[in-house]
Picture (spheres, rainbow, N blue to C red):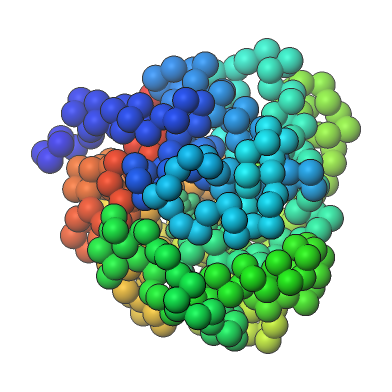
Length: 424
Ligand code: 9WN
């Protein structure tokens, strides 16, 4: 791979092998052993990658993602394979929820990138309306769940760090510090059997992640209670931008299917979310993560700011400021977008979401830049995605300075996004 500036040949063969190797027969495990279930945003990215290898399999990935939707309309962060034993915490922590297809699911969600991936897939590899419509309707129900159960001050509230998809980003440190940790004896971590503990969340974080789940169970998993009075409540501009883009994308797909009602409602949600986030954006294009318990804003800078680029209708000055942040600014890295800037409190170059570069954040930011018309910056990031593959292979994340591989290996979304980019 090294020396090939376009990450062609070998890297693509390796990427295809990774995706095939992680195929659980309809959905893709994010990484062998480390993550043996179906994860929400992972699956959406994997659908894109599969389309370069097998279009039928790509659509199947999205169908299985929405098949795990629960009775409330939420699509959980994990749909569990009850036979898999290498991941903890398992389904027993989540109050016995199941998806429509009977699989055990968790009781929290993840960044809703699925509609954006669906729109991209439908554009490149269109399927007939009878196949696309059920997926659209399921995603519409999920978006409605956000808009009716989770909105505070016009934005979706995150009630657990895992919902952000950026589990131990420093943004969550202060809000999480208020949660009384559970007894360490309750922890049965398996992740550190696969990945060096220095690259994973700390024990003190896990004790609070689990305590927070127990508090959610005590609240009867009631979503409005959690969003309005829960122990951990945060507004994440990255998450808001992802949801606003997803609503806009779903509106487009629904309109082309002739579903005007769905299209209009999604478009209205997208506008409402975008105007709520725009109202708190600074000149620098940054809105900051806000701890809703205290009203305080995280002082550092990270992936949440980069992902703001996805916001439909982002004012051009803000869009350019974010471009400057990721290319040449505090989030610049030769292998993509830094998850956390060097100057932020809690920065750690090798630890998970505290500094390393992740392929999905780089790719989503490039998509946002392209949609805002900042094509040169988008091309730079796309090139850096290929550099990531050259230095880190299909790793889960990479060191922001030297690009060496970190975290899990044979990681599905790294492979999938590389395949999607090369196939375009
Ligand atoms: C908890 C699967 C997931 C990703 C997340 C990433 C990591 C899980 C964990 O792995 O989180 O959901 O156990 O660390 O942070 O973004 O979806 O790849």
